[in-house]
Length: 253
Length: 287
Image 1 (tube, one colour):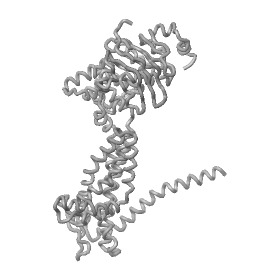
Image 2: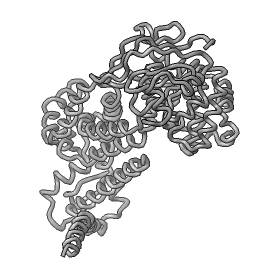
Image 3: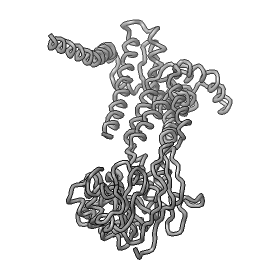
Image 4: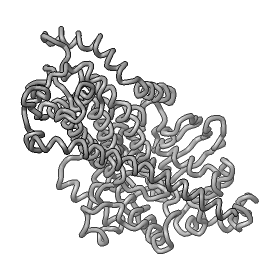
């Protein structure tokens, strides 16, 4: 991998109460690449990517040991504000979660909380983000309509557009296609391939074909451990670990 | 045999269900029968908008405008005090408070709801009333303001618990979405959670107000009971409820006065009904 390292986890251990969810994880995410996390349910992959934008802090009784870096910044250092990190590292969730507001307001919201006030700039940014998220043509006539009236796939692209508007550097996708049909899934995947030109992308997925299609690097998680991490091609064609091989050939999970 | 049992159980439950409606209808019919009789001697408009309430003078003057104004003024005052505090308290409990404080606060709110209104009225009479009197330098502390403050305490538990429920039932994904966009906690509360819970919060406020407007004991004890149209919040007023409670004992059955008190009951019934239906509409908008 030639690109520079964008985010890095260093000896990360994570606990929910007394339960250890992640064990000694070291992993680097490269810029302008798609990095996929695969593994069976409950293996810790979602927990892991939520460390990249400090979302786990919102849950009570959690404990993080180890460090996570964004460029060279230790994002958990007491000097760093979680809000600033989340402005640089966006996230798209498993279930589309547009706000119960209009399409336009869903996108302008991120700008407004970041202090942008000029109306023309906001309108331009909304259009630009919707275009980047390949949603503009479907919604340009009805920006004032409630976002909840869009289809699931459209809602998910709206959530991506919402992310793009705030000009993140990294976008985390937490099983973005888990609740979508195959056509919507294909559109999101196409979008991810396009977005990696300007962003660093991390995607958690249950779907191994999806990981194989979109990612450059893949990490395989099992019971809180990162069993294997490397180029996607290698993981899928010549896995080094037996557990990885068993999982990708469908013997469990 | 089992079918027969099933049949009887179902019928029994149906009757129980219908009973509540039946009683409401019965109460309303009784109210209407007794109350509408007053309109033989006074025109409805004169009754509602008449400025003088002298039920036992000769001839009796039965205008309830001062009572309506009294009720509305006390309710408005209570709303202005209890809504901001109640909603802020709900936000604190639902969003900000650490788990332990949250438990303590919720228990406290429930306790506040459990205080009988006569006790609140009594406490108001010995503490609040003298305070109002000296602070505002008034001839008497038995004023609409005192009533509003005490009633605000009575509305608060309803507002807090229903609003807290509404905030709590906002999908967690909205909150996550806002945080993930780099919103601060307050921005998330103000721009996402409160708007998403708005219908539930309005319902909470309506239910709280419904409780206030129907409250009798505490207001009777501390508002001074003067049936005059109030020109400020610092004068004694008399509410619809207090009038019925205070005068029903001495009204001669079948007299004009007696019928007028029932007519006041109808007015109250209609006001509460409207408030409850509005609250209901907002509550159901959520789902």
